Image 1: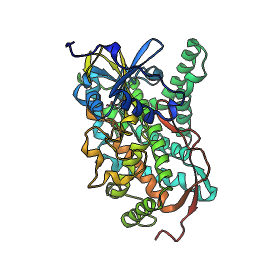
Image 2: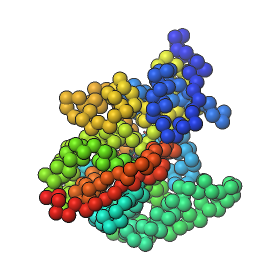
Image 3: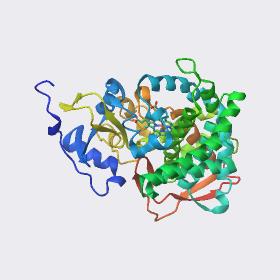
Image 4: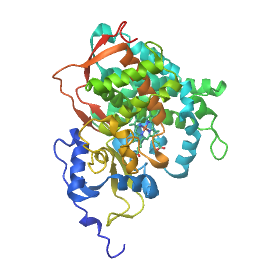
Length: 441
Ligand code: HEM
């Protein structure tokens, strides 16, 4: 450690306020203003270091990324690896890189052609009764859509009883920790859930091994590791689980908030609708090519990513000592790079408290002035593998919902973004939906 570098103990210490979970980004941005880009908190004898701002993001995600471990970050969070297995999000080092390399082809934008028809079908079926119901919680609706889409695209399960069973197992896995009272009970119940999951997915894997397909599961079963061996069923199931864990809640909350924002500013809604009508027409389902050309919706989506980032902080275990912003941080520390706080810095995003899609359009392009300022999907070599999948799915949903329904937020509801591992609108988001029959054209 060089003489002008301050020791770890000198890093400013913060306490989390009671309302931390509902204003995570704003609070950590205040701490950034008060203390600079690094501060820490001590909880249950463990030091947690916060790294905030574009420079910190670049440090963690790119320049010094090998000093940080996903396995000791995401893998340990709420026992994620123990429950879901070791998948892409929780792996480290060359093993991660090999598996990422293997899975990348199924997540390129051109590959989304295979998923757009199933996305469109599921969206159409799921939103069909919004008009009849008159009022819907778009958070609950989006959750059903994103689960059905992910389950079918990732595992080949068909919407209906199979996917419903999968949904049920999955939600029990996600919430098991909240209900069990002992380690023994956890073991027994988690073993039972894994047995159910195996019974559901192993036949799908066997089917793919016999008749390879070009979807994600098909790709995983035909893949060979460095020594020419196929991936085990266990590993394939872990990958499918982790893709679903990483992709489901995140896409759900972002789509729900985006639909909500499209009820808030008439000028924004009208421009988005005009673009849809010009590109897709009043009733057709969007093709991938049209989805790629939804430039205005891209701006609104970028602003939703900034304003409502589904992941507030990226967790990491520090595996090698480092120096950042004049302080020394030893290996063994737990670190969080803060996505939500980075998106709230006024020196980067003008009036960050205002929802303003135009900030991403030329000539402002605020996200391009400072690298690693907008990191809703992470960044660097470990940027979210599902970014194309999520954006295409969300745009397909908005495209169908906006052209079919006139949406209006139910007045006087309490809207709160609540952060645990990922974000959710705590009391849902209720919108009124009125069919645009004969209006859209
Ligand atoms: C709006 C939707 C989504 C958001 C905001 C989001 C956000 C993120 C973020 C912030 C990271 C990086 C975490 C870090 O640096 O610690 C990440 C990684 C990841 N995401 Fe997403 N995600 C979304 C959708 C998806 C979808 C749909 C999938 C899969 C189908 C997915 C799969 C993954 C995986 C596997 C990783 C780990 C990649 C790696 O480490 O190589 N995500 N995501």
